[in-house]
Amino acid sequence: MIETVSRNSNSNFISFTPEQLLVLEEILEKEVSYYLKNRMFQQFIKDCNLLSVQDERRNDITRYQNIGKMRLKVVKALNAVDDRSENIMYN
Image 1 (cartoon, rainbow, N blue to C red):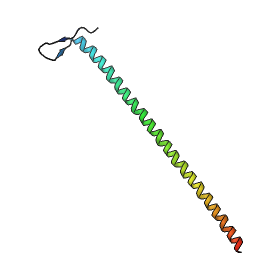
Image 2 (cartoon, rainbow, N blue to C red; image 1 turned 60 degrees about the horizontal axis):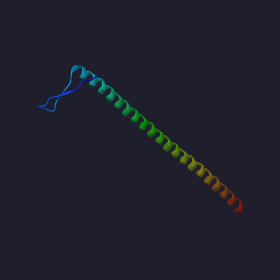
Image 3 (cartoon, rainbow, N blue to C red; image 1 turned 120 degrees about the horizontal axis):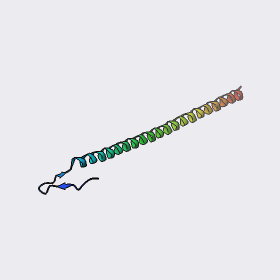
């Protein structure tokens, strides 16, 4: 258990015993480790979400391109039908 910390009345420095310093070091290591792991995990989640959004956008673009290609095929087919019907009508 951590004993009472002594404060030097002449300064703002706090003095710790070696045992207290070891306990503080352990606590800090755990906190820093937890913080870093938490930050890394948050970044990982952010990256996954970003990739997910990028995939959705990419899928949307592909979907729109496919729709555009289908429309173009339909328009070409209709034009071809119109051309044939005009040729039939004029011949």
